[in-house]
Structure formats: structure tokens, C-alpha cells
Length: 185
Image (cartoon, rainbow, N blue to C red; front, side, top):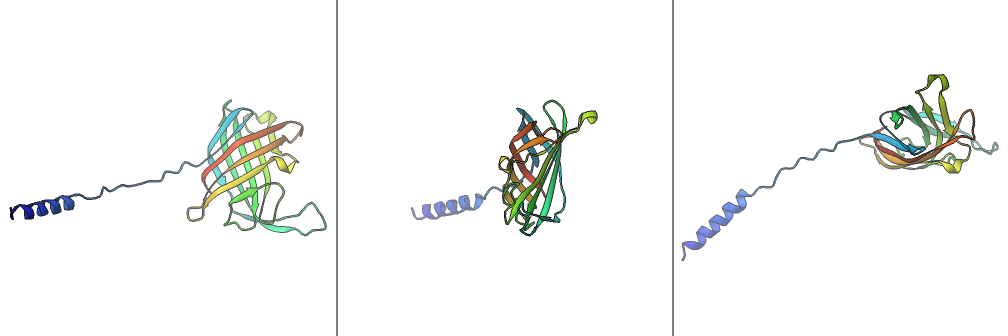
């Protein structure tokens, strides 16, 4: 019986030593995109660009108040809608600190940020270019940046914009369910 226990102990040590943890490699695959719905038609783009921040002065509606410096960032995205129209979306927004972008942006600038302009162009018909921009009512549009990775310079967020035709402001379109997913700024 004395010989039996060392054998069991030796077998147990061999069993433990032979178990090694599995090596798992995790790769994060980025799928940058901009998407939204308008007039019940989905639109998605994986082709976009960001301009470097430009220093701008924004003046409040009250002309007795001084202007305020912001860093303006502009994102452009290109894609096709369900009717195969080529659309270009341009979103310009302002932040006091160009390194801290998380937050809500509306046309009414606050002390930290604001939505400068949004434009949508239908580039498919060059004879009758359709162009839309932010409507005058500031409560109808918001851009929200929910996540920011400063190390990788990525942002993600959502938006909802109400845009008016530049020639006839009574014609409106709503860009709803807007998503910005892991785009590099």
C-alpha cells in the first residue's frame, strides 16, 4: 500500500502539468459607418472623411454678448440610398476642447459645444441638385457623441436632424435613427 500513494501523487502532478491554458487571440474589427433613415428609406455609408479642427468664433443671438471661440470639426459621408441616389451628408459641429467630444450638440451653442450646420445633397441629378440644411427651429436637431477613444481617435454616436430644402423651406426631411459607428476623426 505504501507504493500506491506516491504513484497517485505523481500521476496527479503529471495531469496538472499537462493542462495548459488555451491561447486565445482576440482581434477587434472596426466597421466604421454612418447611417440614417429618411422618408422611410435607409442610407448607409462607409466612405467618410473628417477635417482637422478649425478655430471659429460663434456669436450668440444677443448682439450685446461677445463671441466665443470653438474648434469646428466637419464630417462628410457619401453613400447611396435605397433608390440608388448618391447622397452627401456634411455635419459641422463645434467643441471648446477638440480632444473632448462626448456630449450632445444642438444648434443652440452652450459653453462647451454646439451644432454648426448639417447639409444633405442628392448628387444624382446634376440638373436639379437637391440641397437641404438645418431648419431654423433649433429644437428639432441633435447630434450626440456617446463614445470617444482618444488613443485610437474614434468616435461613435447618434443623431436626428430636421432639414429644410434650401430653395423652399416648407419642404422638410427628417434624418432619423442616425448612427455613427467607430469613425476615425
